[in-house]
Image (cartoon, rainbow, N blue to C red):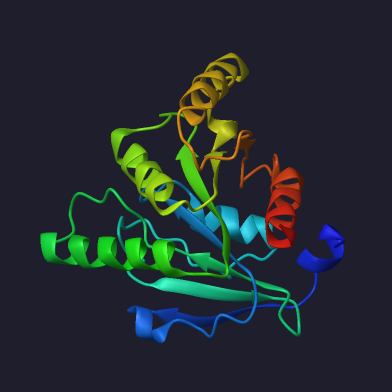
Length: 204
C-alpha cells in the first residue's frame, strides 16, 4: 500500500456511534486513536489524512462523546475510529462512566480493530490516567502503539529524555508495540512515519 496514494485519496466521515449498537458493520480493518482530552488527537488525525477539518478539534475537554468513524479509500480500505478523550475533569460522573464503558466495550469486543494508537503529550509524558487505558488494552489483548504529540513544543534534549522514559514504560506492557512514534501535527513532524505505522497495522 502506497501511503501517499492512500492518504491523498478519498477519506470521508462515516458515522458517530454513541452506543455499541450504532457501530458500523465490521467489514474492513479499523485503527483507533485514543488519548487524554486536549492531547491533540483531532489535529493529529487531520495531519495524518492531510485534511484540515475532517476530525473536529475542540478547546473544550471532553467535547467528543462518541466514537467517530472515518472511511479511508473508496471502496473503503480501512477505517479510523476517533475515540472520546479520557481524563476530563469537568464532565459529570455519569457521563464519564458512560464514555468509559463505551471505550472499554469497543476495545474488548471489536474483532476488526487492528491497533489502537494511544496519544501522549510529549510535554507531560505518560500519566496515571494513560496507564489505566494501557492496562485496559493489556487486559483486552488489544495491540497498541504510543504516539507522542506536540513535539514542536518541547526542547530536543527534553524530547529525547521523554522518548527514553516512555520506551522503558512501554516495555512493561504486554500488548504495547515495542516502538513509539514522535509527532507534531503543526509542523508535520513524524507524520510520514505514523502513516507507515498505520498501514503496517492495517495489513497485520
